[in-house]
Amino acid sequence: MTRIVAVGDNVVDCYHALDQMFPGGNCLNLSVFARRFGAITSYLGAIGQDAAGDAIQKALAAEGVITERLRVLPGPTAYCVIGHRQGDRVFLKFDLGVSMFEPEEEDFAFVETFDAVHIGQSSGLDAHLGRFAKTVRLSYDFSTRRDADHRASIAPLCYLASISGGDLDPSDAKALLRSTLDAGAQWCLVTRGERGAYLGRGDEFYHVSAVTVDAIDTLGAGDTFIARTLVGLLRGENPSEALEAAAQAAAETCTRTGAVGHPAAMAVDAGDIPALEDVR
Figure 1 (cartoon, rainbow, N blue to C red):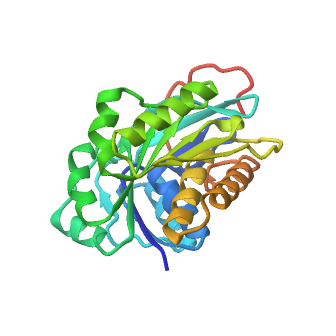
Figure 2: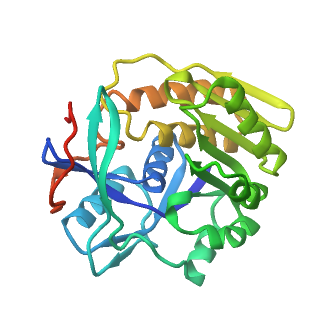
């Protein structure tokens, strides 16, 4: 069975108007979604000794995600305050808490037992990517970061390089994919929100349109897309079919509140929240 470990960032996403918080963060979300898609997954990160950290641990346990290398440290769990405008998520405020950490030798040895490791650019682990990639396939989420020097340094390490390009027109999105592959990534995925996504390898090029739904909350849709694509590629699925499945799964994520669900009463003192019209 496909085995994926996600290493890096976690938060609780705080929906201030609902007085609820949800486990989140790119790497945590991917570990949950990939598990739902049938992979054996583990999450390796750092949480605080507080109610938010407890909520994350309970959610991961409920989803069957392995957490033996999850750190529980003194201090607050990272949080992000989420607002919405016409169904699309808006980040209002955040605090990194104790989420940043340095990998230990035992972490590297643990990661070697998996088929792939996923790390995001917000995890603060770029300095260690080379070592991770020596022993296991690397999936890396550039998110919206697109500077050429950064991509050139990381793309050669990537089995799958994922980039968020919802603001790009088709020609620019295709050029971004092409340049990332030319820089050395084996596969490149450019997600474009309601405009679909592009996937490429070598001279192969695939496109999928977004699945139309009545979106409630877009938080986690991109992480869903990456997770389903990564699982499909590792399984050897037809790339077009993997993309179609990813688009369907991402659309379903948009129909519920919170990236992975598991709401808990908000236990984060986020202080003053910036005003935003249509906040839910």
